[in-house]
Image (tube, rainbow, N blue to C red; front, side, top):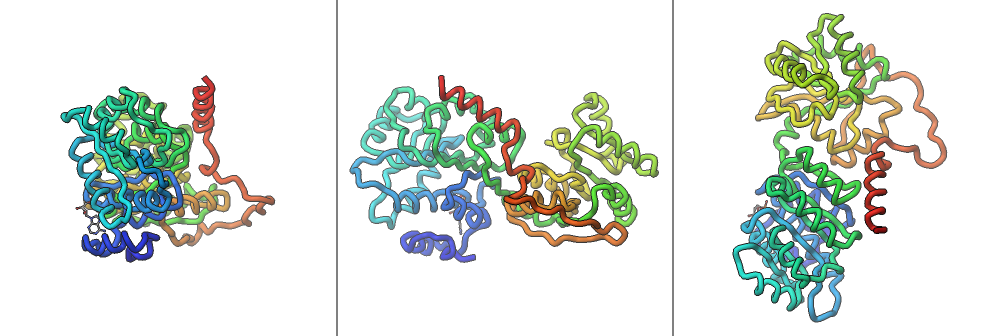
Length: 414
Ligand code: AMP
């Protein structure tokens, strides 16, 4: 796709040409349109993927379209980064892409190690775009010299690197001072559990994009198999016989089910085990070790237990039950094809779950062909759609989201 397809005005097209950016990188192709759509975004992207331009370009475009006529700039865009170097780098990218604009934004960067007075003075002179390390940002903010009431866009860059810097506490303070109504963009090379907590604090229902590990995701053969729910276990046994997979990780929705099915598979002579949060830590360690050594071939696991599992050579991941969110889908299938190896990821769907899978595809920017396996073909009829759209699992608010919303509202009322 050329840059011309990305709704960027001729001024930016010109700058892109001058910089010899011929076509967008995958992260730019995914992020730029979503920023224009006003979506909250969580993007998993590595340094070097072109992520800076993926937010700088559309934010500058939106800023220049909407800029008001006031002489003094108001802070509309805030970017927080984990390091001084990255702060300077991002500010430079903003400067660089602004160079052909008729009216240029005032870009201020805040970093430690430099006189705070000068930085405050610059903000007071007018600032449209503020790029800062979180520590210095809070220092300046505590001096009550910064008006954030006009802020529209909040960007966290390389957010996973901030996790190490006691950032979680700082983030709470930052969020307290930002307007509730704003757009949020978060970039992170990895997506550990702690990051998901941070995402939940900052935004609701973000679009999750993953291109960081693209080579890996591309080397996963993703398949979707239509099968009736009661036929999933026989189909899985059939597939295990047919394929030469050594290690298969099967994801299920609930803990009891992982125990039950593992037991049934063992009765069929398959080296299977369950892995869930109810098991004693010792048992979990032993099971994992046995799986890594190939003494257990099929591991039935829940998401919680499997998060952060680092097993290099899982041959196949099976979504026996579909994951709740697109982020979980990417996380699950990422357990295979690690360290340059290839792998397969199968998802079982039926009439009940097809709408949910479509949503996962849409949000993950994928489209997969539906397969049927002889002897296990999906039978029956699709349930009649009730008037209006049917509720889709994962699309509505979860209990946790509702609780968070309630707590936030309570906080606002105080
Ligand atoms: P980043 O991941 O944002 O740090 O960008 C990494 C490098 O890629 C920087 O030197 C950018 O100037 C360059 N870059 C970003 N996007 C493109 C593009 N579409 N075409 C060519 N180079 C790019």
